[in-house]
Amino acid sequence: MPKQKGNGALKNWAVFSSIGLQMGLIIWLGNLLGSWLDTKFNTTFLETTITLVAIFASMFSVIHRVNRFNKDN
Image (cartoon, rainbow, N blue to C red; front, side, top):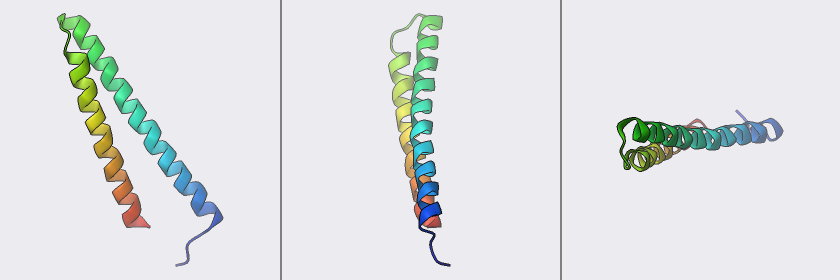
């Protein structure tokens, strides 16, 4: 099946922009959760720890989606 030129580029742009938005949302929600837990339990390390876990989770998600995208194309 031949690849589409015009519509395919728009689809690729949409897929990759959604990956960036998803990554930002995961990190932001992780930071928000860590901040809330820090105030609830009166600690100082949970915000940093959960934010780092969210960064690694978002990177895993990006790598997984890019690999799946490459496999489909």
